[in-house]
Image (tube, rainbow, N blue to C red):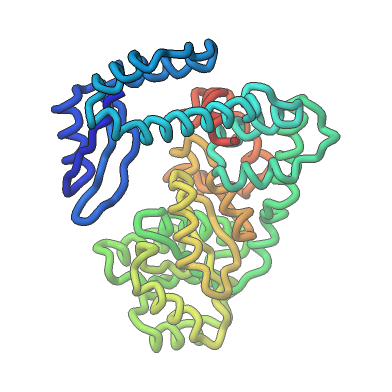
Length: 391
């Protein structure tokens, strides 16, 4: 077999030279970095096939004893290049034998135990629902062995885990009757102002308009103060605009007789450095301000995780889920609630005030996530793809 050496400054240049010399079917035997570039050893595919066939034939049939004249004739025919390549050919055959031995000893991935089969099935179902691979691996690692091979038993076990660990309000009274100061925080366009209007309507029905006050700190967004004032006028609730920490402290001190105060804040990207200033503004008051983080149900797990990390700070009482009507699945939100141990207060599913706001029902939300697995999920993998991920 004729093996040729190719030198070039880059791998791509060397491969181009290989293709131009030996053709598109050239076989790369080895490559290594050398001074000022790379070295590639290659041969033609036909030459390699012939050499392998000859090697197999030699192992099957003992070599015949040749006369000295025949050996001398063969020696004269050999070119220096072929003779010099013999050690390389020997090394190539050794590598092929090692690879064949490895493949023979490696277990067949298609042969799986019953436990491995159910783990693979559960992994695929959780991915199809939109849960991350991290959560899927965690569930599989803790899957009880007594559930058998029924995927429905395994899925019910996952449901029970979620039901036990996702925290929600027990009832409306837990929020409406407790009172206090609440600030809604979160990214721009997430629906904070509309959600405040929905909460305010519930509080007015419960305690009356004179027991509620609305505070607006969003003087940056065009039309934001006017939008809050309109909601306040409709509900008969006073609205107090503030622009800095001093004004906020003074306003809250003057509203001590109110049962509940709702604060509308400036929407900021989770990567905006001004979030730190906003959290400081809400933390440096005599009266404690509880923050409710608004989370967009349509956001990805990674985005939601960034948002929670940015807005967590201290005194984060819980969260409100918005845009539920626009979300295909909410497994992303459920996973974030688990990961950060957040309490879910309400879910918003539209623009109507106050109708499109409901108390969070964790069983209903979890069932919604599990129903999605029966639809045409873009994240559903085929069996052979799952085998690649699981191995």
